[in-house]
Image (cartoon, helix red, strand yellow):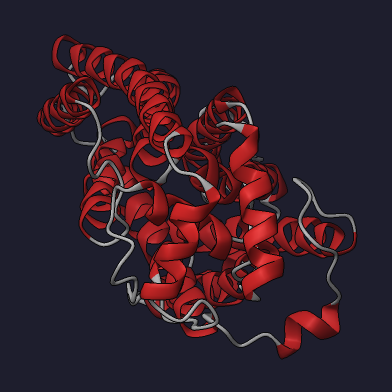
Length: 387
């Protein structure tokens, strides 16, 4: 983006007392971590305790005392990479936007993760259907990168046509700049700054925690690709934890159940998240302001939404692993349909891609079309585990 736009924001904030940032991502992620782990505990003590313990199948509490540490370490490794991916995604959203971030990261997850899971699952999925679907995801990644680049150019053109005088008019005739009821907080109280306009872009930037104006689009894409690689590894790691394809367990030790594996997985994910985010409170990235644990505990803005997000993430991951154990982890990567929901939210509620160029719309349609086709093909490739 044009660097002059960042100067415009700073000057406007000084003159009109605009709240310079939204909620810090470290605070949000710490909240998510709490309920994400709570979801794993609930699953472990409910689904994990159903049925009777036998020689080849143990309940959750029984498995906690078994000598299954090789599988536990695989599960915990999966939690580590998921935590790194989630952390990266928080920053990628600011640079790339909700829609493109989810498509790019999810598609990379499928391209790498599905291939690994296909071989780990002893090829129970139909390769002649599975890999064309993977190819569609790869094409979706390319479309996503092009969408981001095209939309960034559109935004730059809009911002270059807007001077400081034009933005002052928006503030004087529009919503209260000190109000927390805007799109960054989920209510969309920006009446005069219409979605897709340069004024809207600057208003959102003024409320956003992570400032992205003036930064290279390559930063966001690099973060997306790193997050995608992290996400692509957590499912194969969990697959190894619950099915022991590498025969790391001693004879007679039952395989780790999905519920026990998910508990260890979530514990490591939460520990890494807490360590990294507390570190980032005091040593923040991307010029975010420093914070403290006390400031985090006193920050209740948006905490309810963060708690809800953690619950949804936790139960979503748990259900994904249950499905993978039954139908093969390669095919269950079709749950990456989440970008379709993200695009719906991004376009309808957060004003993404409004008033963009025809080229951007064509690329966006191509990205979503390839993603929908890929999800359908991947679901059609599902098999059935023999044991």
